[in-house]
Image (cartoon, rainbow, N blue to C red; front, side, top):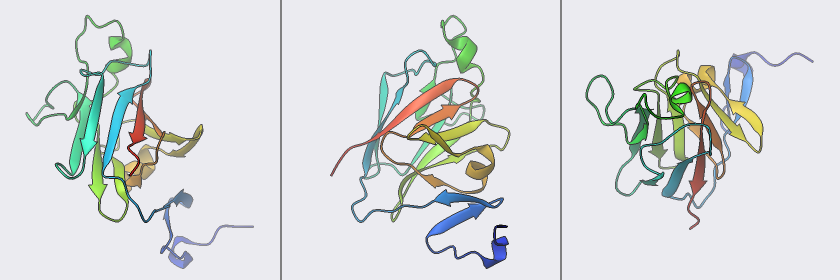
Length: 162
């Protein structure tokens, strides 16, 4: 059975990009606090973990180094120290790679900031979105999602329960 053309798809509860279905599961109780940490051995964050608090800030830029090339702060910073033992992984993350934003009715969402950046989201071990999807839309994140940046750096997303 062939999929319906994009123009014939009901987008109230689902989003479609390039005929790929992307789940848009929303919850009544959306957490405004979350945490990002590195998955051991995949790369190096400048801090052990980053706390996200939508009551204080709505957008968190992810990139390599403390600041991107334009001088804007990376709120979630991947080490750019060439002496770092995991720099071989970190170097594939751009200085302005992705962004986690808080959207009132969806919660924390991820968006790629450049269609050349490799950004993949895994949920329960399954790939649910990649660069092509994430450059066009913002994907709502769920507890325990894994965000892969570049070729090898993996971040763990954890929601704080209400």
